[in-house]
Length: 377
Image 1 (spheres, rainbow, N blue to C red):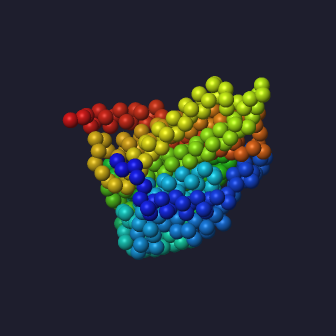
Image 2: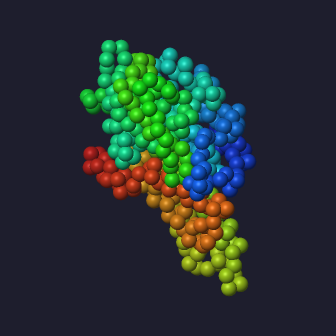
Image 3: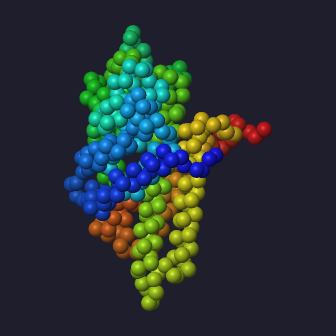
């Protein structure tokens, strides 16, 4: 594993810092805590700035207007976005576009990807299944009917579903294969209901009722869903890392200024030990994130399939981000519960990321199964 970022990856991270710098998380009202408030759409002005900085096309080839970079570069940008709680479908649209490029038909790629690179076409992914706990690919069925595909089922908690032009929906064929359906917004046989995340963001319950799609709108390629699923999970780990780093920085600044008994609370051993523990969490989150992102980007062989590295990253991200925000709330005292102070928004977003990643125990079980299936030589 090479921990050195390339010049192109570092340039993407620096460009992201410049784009996200003006975003002020404390200036955005929290829909989850404001009666009657709903986050209706993503930050379109910020989305346009990301497009102008060529940060929406990192994973796309030059022929589609992209930079031809990899998962590591995307995770560097996502890390910066989470520090500012940027309300944009950067992860979902970027990952979906990359899956279409890697596995979709050339004509489908040429139709969608240039618009996605410019920010004119927004993509998202239905990755949470019917309940949020079952495999996403088992929530929808896909069957052939002549020259078309017919889809039936329900996907819950689809991010940006009400804004995306196309939603990538994994579906099982009943023969052990998973396909990816490219479902346009407002398509016949598609019903979209409102749901809301713990942070107040607007999600969608996607119901497919004998929805028919042409053959070109369905990606039937081995490994497509597994690759996209791992990329989404790794990107979510990057979001958790960026959020956690910002929260720990906020906590350190507060502890350095808040005084008790005539001394900053940062000088108290109990405070310092808790902050140090959370710093260790973040470094573990970072190391496991880059391992997973590097495996996805390089395709390098390992003792375990890449899903194993992703599982380790998810374990640390889900547990780590929860511990970081809980310690931050504890050390902030009453300020942590003040809705006029930005920490409450970071806590709500952290809980959403934790729920999106799933429980660490489930990933530990999956990792155990992988270790049993791939014993050391």
